[in-house]
Length: 75
Image 1 (tube, rainbow, N blue to C red):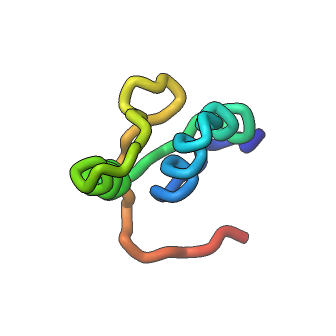
Image 2: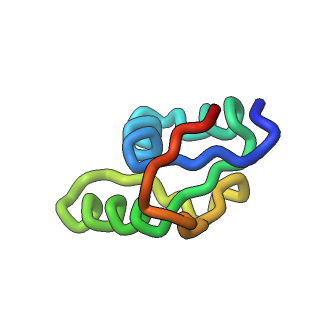
Image 3: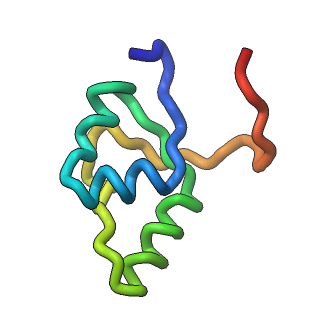
């Protein structure tokens, strides 16, 4: 398990939620940070009738804005 929180985009949350395995992310990564834009994408999917997970009540997920919109790979 990483020693710091992992940032997730929409797809792992959406697809693991669809197959009832969202808890795999908690098992693999412990804490997960989700940018507000991911919640917006999940909300847009829900408005279109897609079954999306409700991630807000999950204690291992924290909604956290990104410091930058630019991706910088880790070493």
